[in-house]
Length: 191
Image (tube, rainbow, N blue to C red; front, side):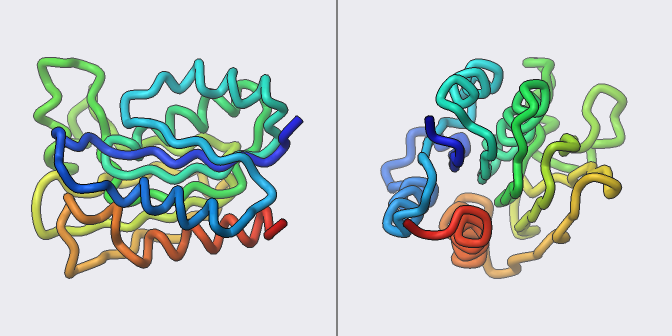
């Protein structure tokens, strides 16, 4: 049984030809030889099925990192893990974008200012997440959305603005990668 897991979730790539930053982050985390199992997911992964799979593998703690629409998937996965009593010691998000449930309204995801629309809202961070960090940019659309955090249960490390990055490169941002590596080392150490 593997108790410690790391889940890294990529964003919507529009079939880009470049390797995404989540792929290089998987390699960087793997090189740490952390005491954890690493899983890479796509932004549209089934959060419930993934949570059940992690629990069946013996997961007790899961660190989650997500980029763009993968940020919403990260929050969804954490909520499914909450239902299974699995702790998320840390979640690190790069320009997390809220996916609106209504297919006809997906354009709303382009601008976090639409969060005030009743069926939209912010990205909700569930109470089993102990620490959450968010890196955002304001240079183009989409942009990182606000996180709704219950501060009685979750420590919010704040929203860090990366002024020289654009959305398409946020998954490669060194501060994002550094924070993911830092939380993995802090919570799971090295082998």
